[in-house]
Image (cartoon, rainbow over all chains, first blue to last red; front, side, top):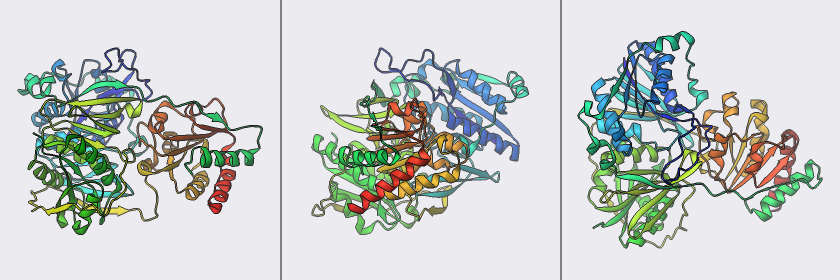
Length: 265
Length: 328
């Protein structure tokens, strides 16, 4: 089975986010970069498919050279090769522009299945997977918390509000990953894995290698852009309910506050 | 010239989901600002007479794609059906629900319509005829205003529970037009749907959430939170620590790798308040923290803090809530 994972590098979820002086972007200096957790679930799911069906796992990513480290991490987990689209012209692109570029890379690789996170923990755009599938004319199954394949089709479960849906598609198809660390339990890279990863093939590509340019994928093609950022309103300081009360007294005081002041119960 | 605003509804198991009415209410404001009619789109199986309900929330005309094959959300079917209705018009904006299915649908639909999507928005404004939308990024650690390029169709998915919903006006009539459904061949399908019938409240739509963390110590201890939640009509959430420990299902996880919630009241019990968790619940209207460690970061976000052993406090609090409810 020929498997592709679309992987994005994001700031660590522990990062404190600050707005840059331009008011339109965040300060990236001093950020620690990680594989987007939902894409890490995709790597884990891809490796499990490979263990069952054989084949190769190719990691496809985009961004500057710092992304190499994240691709190498996925290779150390057990993926076979990587492709990094390192092209400055993608910088001003919107989700659709990036999706066009990724769809072109996928088309060149001719996989049976593409896996990626349902969203990335940086801009929470939640668009990459469904857009790539639409551009390829493939079915997609979203927000998988389980994934099974017989080699010619794929079945997933996806949680919806107040329930769970089981979906099925014939291959080739794209699946976006939901769930959590507890669901996918992505493996750690072993020391031998890390050594091997250094020798695994990692290709550097430009948009031109796929017959694309800024006109399709970059700033000139962008239909939407972030024009300004702001911090969420500060919460006004709260109070500790104590007043020397015992447990029952505090419980009664809290109920009173929530009922009479906040009016939420 | 733009000739309408479009709001897309979500129809499931015989009813519109509430977020559909929130989206219609918000879209009505945009349509009024631009002085164009509001068209609604309802896709599903057995929509029938229900379509008129969208009119109660400000939709002028509803286009209904009603077909047994559309009973469940299948992106390959829903996207072309909705796109073909939108393409009849030159909308100033398309608003959709940022529900689980809605976010997935919106993304694929934006690629189909070759336009830009602002996902999970919390505010929409019309600024001199141009539509702008505000959305949280980094799970709410920061907020971004989005604008569209000249000539691009603004697509906006709206976070549930945030936009003001009009009061239903049952005297308000909407025209309803049934659309001939031309379904493409699809390679994907729904095999089964299991709906929770226990009346459990969904986290992202809950007015009150009681959430437990590492301080709960064991799966069985969550029973005290469930008892409290039952008294309050609340949903039960959990921190990543509690989910990773296997005490709660992943669907209960609140935080940056989990659900972002915005209830009226969030009660954090035995949760220290890691930055990832605070990002997921920081926009709650009121926050209560119960923790025996007075230094826990959660207290910096809390409107009301209780420094107590949760195993003593929560039963006492539940009892007080019960007393209050019995007198109301």
